[in-house]
Amino acid sequence: MKCRAPLRDGRLYYCALGGMKGNGTSMPEGADTSRQDQQQPAETARGAFDGLRVHMIGIAGCGMRALAEMLTWRGAVVSGSDMASSAATARLEEAGMDVSIGQCADNIPADCELVVYSAAIHEGNPELIAAADRGIEIVKYSRMLGRMMAQGAGIAIAGTHGKSTTTGMVAYVLRAAGLDPSFVVGATVDQLGGPSGVGKGRHFVAEACEFDRSFLNLEPRYAAILNLEEDHPDCYRDIDEIIEAFKQFAAKVPPDGILVVNGDDRDAMKTVSDTPCEVETFGLSDSCTWQGVDLQHQDGLVTMKVTMNGQEFCRLKVPLPGLHNAYNSLSAIAILHHAGVDADEIVRHLEQYTGARRRMTLKTVDRGITIIDDYAHHPTEIQVTLKAIRDYYRPERLICVFQPHQHSRTRFQLKDFARSFGEADAVIVPDIYFVRDSEREKDYISSNDLVAQIRLHGGEAIYLKTFKEIVGHLKDIAETGDLVVTMGAGNVWEVADEIVHWLGKNR
Image (cartoon, rainbow, N blue to C red; front, side, top):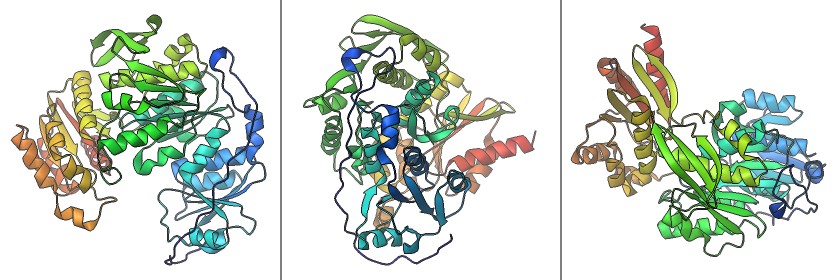
């Protein structure tokens, strides 16, 4: 069914969210009996949504389509809509779902009991308005994820940085160990076949994003807080508000659950003061429950011994470059241990993990020129990623094409951004990627302001307005021994793809 309808103004009134009921226990082979999961077995959880009529607005998004598949497997009758047909909508239709292209009130089935909408859906959406007018229960995507988690062994990975990488680590090892988890990662993981997937096991692994406090809708049994820094100025007034939100997230873990927190991060540790569950720490300090010791650095990679409460647990060659990935690995090891995976299996599979897309993704090495693409868009992420790239690849010249993400973030963290490019020999900055900010924000900050600050800190930087100009400039200056990294949360990857195409065409 195809339907095009204009949006109309209107205020939505949301029905109260009812809780899901369930009981029973289940435990994986080899799990610690003192911390067994108190949730329904997988087959019982499968029927928890049996017969429920669910309509999903924005069903083709990576998280929404995974949720649709999970609901279908668990017995729900799912329909949905999206604005354009795609491979994702075709896949959902092949799975038996009724998917409408275009969004209008008539898309909602007459017997619909629940409407789920993605974060990208505006409150003026005609399907949301129609659902409210009909008195149908309406919930956000993140709230529905929480319901799904409540039916199994939910695992939520939170933090300012490293969420996608660590979520991918946990999901990959669980799958490789035969535990067949469901998962939602904020980036594509090729080893998992995409950013999301449905498994028949009881583990449900999800990246827990603090933007708009959406992670407070999750219901994890196991959770990790990787780190904590000031970010999302459009959602949080200051670091204290961020800490408070993470405190609320930590409090979501039940008394018989486990929370794993970066013991070397002072602000992360502030979030666990009133946590009802058991808290374990990870890091390099002697006080950490899970400690990395005897670190050896070679060609940008870290090898370390991992101890638990001072006793050797395993030895690991961290699969991804950079010290920050040693921290990510420590948190993943702790979570996987409590999920029932033994040490030998954790090491064997974790060392094979190749990472998520746009996380130091190697695009090509051609004519002696290396092209990498990365998602880093926060000053700390930029700094640690550039260092990891330099240590691992050892280029003669490191050129960073950085696309700032949001005017508000660039303005509030301008000086931190300027200091973060110390490992780059040259920085090229296009226009700021405009998203979520008001038009007025454009008047307060520009890419030229960032370039000026980088130069004040002794760096080499230029502003080139368009990607076309940047590609032309790179064609002129790139030479053997150079490494070019495109960096940012917007569409700067297009520059990397253009240069890869140019290199391949001009061999």
